[in-house]
Length: 175
Image (cartoon, rainbow, N blue to C red; front, side, top):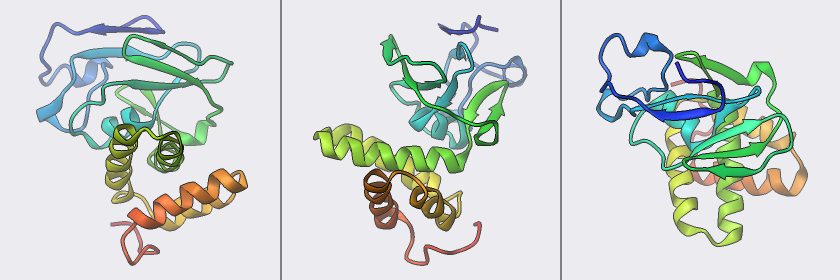
């Protein structure tokens, strides 16, 4: 197990015992990472990294970590951001605190709109792909409801992103 605040390469390639070790692993066995991560000081894995942990697929190039204290920095593959995350918005997956799928969808929608505004087309495309995958596993009306309760302009831009990506029957129940 890694010390809090560290990221290190794992020597093992996975296997049945690796899931119980607490190491960070994507849901898709074909794309298991060889990293062990434990965020420092109450940090929570978020954004594309959280979507990857929940759903699998290719690992992201950056592990985003939301921390409760003021910090905005990038150390290697880990990018820290100051964000408050309540206990209800966190799932422990393999012992690693990760934002819930609903929180991940809202964060990704905000991230897509922010990246589009800044002109980062590649980042926006990657975040949009992750958001599309997450929206297949959460109720779009729940995402809309949470975004509508957010700050007005930022929430409206994120809501437009969700509306563009959500299926036509956007208020459908869990799939």
